[in-house]
Image (cartoon, rainbow, N blue to C red; front, side, top):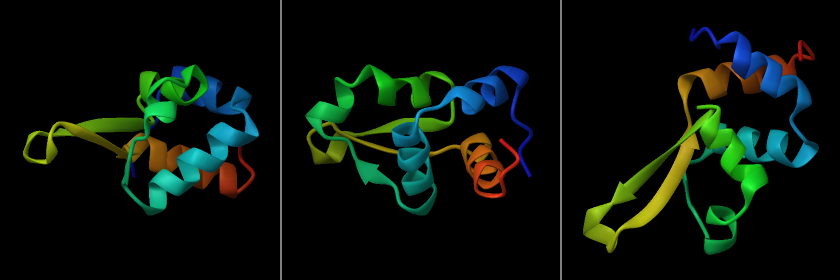
Length: 84
């Protein structure tokens, strides 16, 4: 199991309900990022704190997808278990 950093845990404690829901969804599915998600600072914080990662698909005209990192999966599990 991945070991989240203190910074990631501190961020997880103050994540909004929306951020927690998005992270939980990313644990289940990698998704293409919409233009509104790309522009959303609240959602970009999940990537900035390395709980999710973005992947560029050059064969698909540079479309971006995103999914949870190992630490993001661990944080999401901790949230679901009520530890954060």
